[in-house]
Image 1 (tube, rainbow, N blue to C red):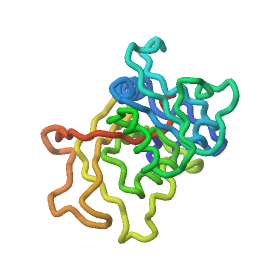
Image 2 (cartoon, rainbow, N blue to C red):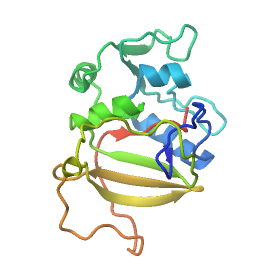
Image 3 (cartoon, rainbow, N blue to C red):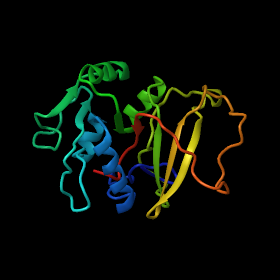
Length: 213
């Protein structure tokens, strides 16, 4: 999740809450249908996310995803992810992460962040779907929602094909999939708000950050 100017937190690091209750509830529902939720150690140390799927009252729902921590650093003692049921993969390699999850029978992976981990997965071509929750707000400074994704020049831009745009509460949710190639321009006319309705997309995986602990 991010503001319209692409910030996932304010300059002082505070981020709760960028998006509203409806968008956060949508992400909890997405967690409940995912096999695993992945977060980097930087985000874990900064935000202490629980990564559980909860209902509107904050009660955990029956189906919970595998909680996965990726990175070399240890979670803070006593934090939400300092728990025996959390899988800690001590690597920064997206392929190693996915191989370890595949070995556990995991198919649908929700990558919630942070920006460096998200960038690494995008650079490696390991993202099937992007769910961008955009709050109609501006910060002007603070961490970006996405870090280095292997794009050094406009010719390498990672273009997405928009499947749908939806207003959820007061926030925009953009559902998109990576385009055919870096820098390529899809010859098909882009999605327009004037179209009759959303275009369905059936894809696995996800990507997001913040605004839904």
